[in-house]
Image 1 (cartoon, one colour):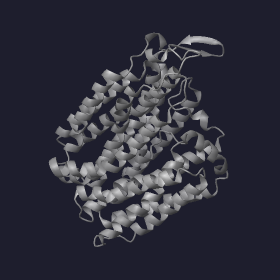
Image 2 (tube, one colour):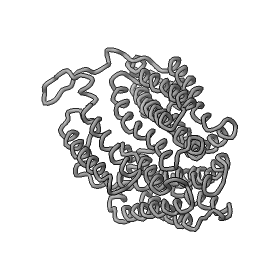
Image 3 (tube, helix red, strand yellow):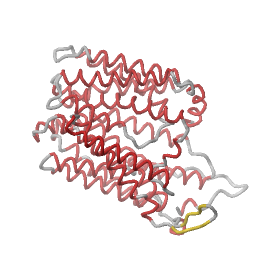
Image 4 (cartoon, helix red, strand yellow):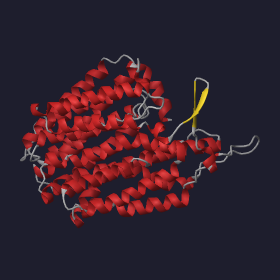
Amino acid sequence: MTDAKAGPEVGTDQPGFDRRLLPPMLLGSVLNPINSTIIAVALVPIGRALGAPASQTAWLVSALYLATSLGQPVVGRLIDIFGPRRLFLLSTGLVGVAGVVGALAPDLGVLIGARVLLGFGTCAGYPAAMALVRSEAERTGRDSPGGVLTALAVANQTIAVVGPLLGGLLIAVGGWRTTFALNVPLAVAAVLLGLLRLPKADPEAVPTERTTGGTTRRESLAARLDLPGMGLFAAMLVSLLLFLMNMHLRDWYLLALAAAAGAAFAMRELRAATPFIDLRVLGGNTPLLATYGRALVAYVVAYSFLYGFTQWTEEGFGLTPFHAGLAQIPMFLLAIGVSIVSGRSTSVRGKLLLGAAGQIVACLVILMLGGDSPLWMLLLVALIFGVPQGLNNLALQNSVYFQADPERTASSATAASFGQHADTGGLHRLAWVMLGAGVLYLLLTLFDRTLGRAAGHGTRASA
């Protein structure tokens, strides 16, 4: 990038971070979380309007994360090649297109397609922001500024707080289609900010060669993207998701296909010169594998609550989308408070154990809920979930960045539990799934002897 070429000169004051980059960075990074949280209160109204059961509307959640899981590694690599500006503009422009398609969608199939476009469109914001932070660190000769990283974190947390409430408000004013139409002005603003603020890439800085074993060779773009790996990864995820969304013995072939694609994917990635996802970093690294497993089950519970519990509060309890969004506010606010307070401690094991206990208690309370339960019990569940939300996010956020998105597993659990309607029986079935994941999370934490060594690393990563 042109602005990153010149470093600080000896004997002169080091330049500071270019604050003009903050608006596009912040807006681009929140496009994904805002679409993730708004859809939670829109699933029931969409199902009613299009005549689709809960097991089918769950695809609106899965579609975005399938696209994101495929798009993020590709976009991250393209950003390394071409710089963040081009990918930021292309992706945020796609968000606007997805907003138009979703707002005008005549049926659920087209709406799922719009969510796929949103997944690809929103997957560039955070990688582009991180690339800009790195390039500014190189240009200024300073480490990544803590204030910028904090601003990104606060922006994403704020969106998590207001997302369900904003979705409910939009639905109350203009119907569920407004939750898609919102992406149009957001995309226009992001594209304009990107054009005005983001630096252009330096063509001379684009790498086209790779050195291995002392031999330098030119690589095509297709080779650097590992298209066969991408195809096998997609086949594995889609087959597994199709099986989990409607588990039945007659669909055993989907599970077999997922296993075969997974094995072929692993073999491909272990041998590829430029793998789509580098599985070699997992080899022999038991602590890292334990961290990934712990994060997966923790976030399965968290996202099952966000989507499943919200659907039940509307369809099983009778709240409007706006009031369902309000019911989520205590969880997010308490989670932010817990993160701030517990962030002063370097203990990792304690946070994870308390977070696991909080998830288990919340799931047990959900099992006592019914359509005639008092409103304060719903708010109590949200408050209890706020504790593990704050603790688990803080303990895991600096150690996990893997493309096996737990949100996809959560949407599968929701679809399998609810079926046609988000009733109380389905909520209790989902609670048992969440409870099992919570207990597994607790066991993974109790028997992980490496957690004591993770405290220092987590402190450095969050600095």
